[in-house]
Structures are given as structure tokens and as C-alpha cells.
Image (cartoon, rainbow, N blue to C red):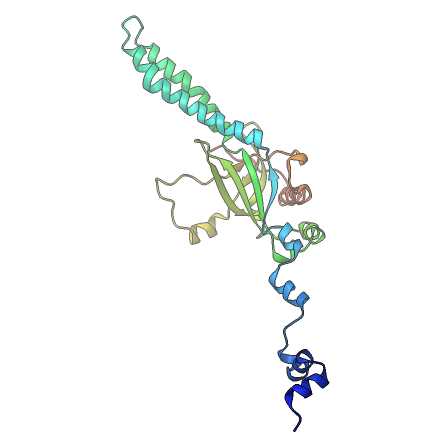
Length: 245
């Protein structure tokens, strides 16, 4: 019997012995296969599932939010401090305090009414095959499925953001509030009443009116947003006219 040391020396060492004894099926996989499973593709990383397709601009968004908060503070200060001081002032008539309170409520009402549908961001939810590359994304945007979810982010009265989710098929072009809004949510009322419970009295109303600017330079993905707008406008033969709420 040949000693093991002499056999290893004749075969070329321990490494050669291991290559002969270890089964090919049990060997470790090549490095390129391991890296492909461990690290996702760069195309999927660059295109997120929740894609930002419209951005109104940081300056405009901050201005609208600050304007809402300022009008609230102005009305509150007038109601709590200025109006009582005028009411208890013997040199001022009794009707001055209510007029001052009403005057301070005018900018508050105006800003809340006309700035409520202002949209700061629009996100769209993408399927996995539309995230593989920009070419696949643009091809998918040519005909967006009706059940694709959109997220409209508006600004609340106290400056925080409010997100409203809906399928793209529920959006319609409208003319309301002297033409300020350009999109409205028209949900399927029959299906919603069957599925959704009745809204509690304390819960805020759903946002159904939206103002989205038409400046292409404000869009992060201009092509996708423009295709989405074209599909929304083509979903109705004529713009829908609704009453302001």
C-alpha cells in the first residue's frame, strides 16, 4: 500500500487531492452566481416601486404651507387678544370687535378654500417589470392599467401633508372654483358604499379636488406624468363640472 504522503506528492499536493475527492455537485457555486443572488440589479434600485412623477417645487410647497399657518395664527390672535381688548375698551364702539374678527377671517377663509386642493407631490405605484429599465417604464406608461394606484399629497390647514390614494381610473378633468382645480376624484359610489363603512362624524372628509400644475420642468419623471395626464383626460369625453365642496 502506497503511503498517503507519497501519494499526495505524486498527485501534486493537497489541493489536487481535494479536487479529485470532492464531488462537483457539492462544490461552491461560482462567484458571479452568488453575487447575482445577493445583490439586486441596478435597474431595480434606480427605479423605486413608489415613483415620484410630479413635484410642485420646494419653494412653492413651503410657501403654501406657511401661508396657511400664518392665516390661522392671525385669526387666533385677533379672536383671543385684539377683539377682547377692543370690546372692553370704553372708547371703542361695541361693533368694532366683531368687524375686526370678521376681517381677520377673510384671509383665513380665502386661503383654506383656494389652497386646499394644491398638490405638492404625485407618486405612482409601479409593477416589477416596469422597474427593470427606463425603456420598460416608458413602454408601460404608454397604456397605464386603470387599477394603477396614484398618491396625491396635499397640504393640510396646519401645514402638514395629507396623502390620498386612489386608482387612476377614478380621476377626471374638471372645472370648478373659477377653474382653479384641474383634477377631481370620482369614485364608484355604489362599490364604495358596499365595501367601505360609513365615515364617522369626527373624521375629516376625503380630498376629492386636486390642483396639479402643468409645468413639465417640475416633474421628476416628466414622460410618465404626461402620459398619466393624457390617459386621465381621455377617460372622459368632456371635462366634468362639479360643485365646490
